[in-house]
Amino acid sequence: MKKIKLGNKELPVLGLGLSGILPRVIQKNNTPFKESIVNALSIGYRFLDTAEIYGFGESEKLTGEALYQSEVPREKITLSTKVWFINLSRKRLQKSCEMSLRRLKTDYIDIYSIHWPNPLISLDETIEVLDRFISSGKIRYVGICNAKTEYINKVNQSLLGKVLTVQFPLNYIDRKEEDKIIFLKERNIFPVAYSPLKSGMIQKNKMLKKLGVEINRSPEEIALQWLKEKEISILIRSLSRKHLIDNFKLLNG
Image 1 (spheres, rainbow, N blue to C red):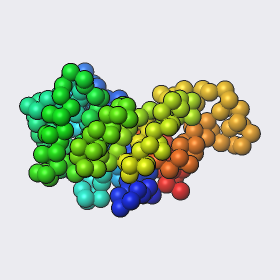
Image 2: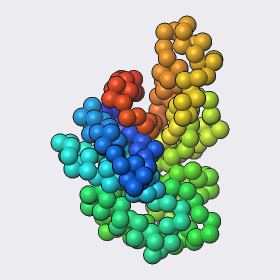
Image 3: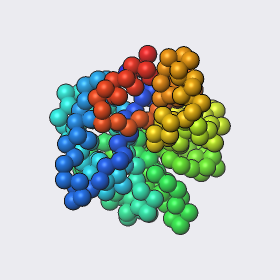
Image 4: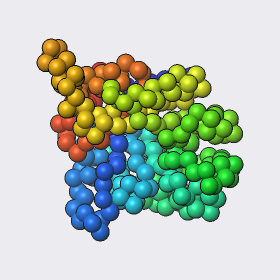
């Protein structure tokens, strides 16, 4: 798996996003979801991104089962999960992390991310608990999602540079947060783009369809190539083995 590097740190250029799943009480058969993770690992994916809110724990649980089933050693995988914004207080954060570790069937999480900032909970309290998680080995790095630069700076400085990733939506159509790339790289933080195909809107974009006909590429290929040239990490979600392979070939080349 191709990696991007910042200082002495590195991160796979392609990650498997593991959202879009319903709780098991609603969706009885989640086998295709788990199979997509096993398939991705067999293809060469080494970055998995889930969250406690995805399927109310179901995504983490299936990810843990897939990791247990896979022949890829745990230390070869960058495992990322996120704590929901209502769980950032000291007591709830402690419980959330323990539950995520249990569902993921692992004794450490590579990147433990704040899913959304919560102005109603003391950030200093959240940082204190995250710092303790790092010291105890429960997590290796902290991630931040959907946050402004001031928030990112505060967390990164307080944790002495232990923020590894910042996730934000970025794609060929929606470029509002593109300026974050330089800001983050200057601080040795990996930019991670989610929603790279904008929930199917890329495929329907008239300009990209026209360009695709001219250069014999699909709108999705054009959009992913545009992101690839930014030298950032990209999270893509797919249950299709063919799409997993196609995305891997494009972004790992």
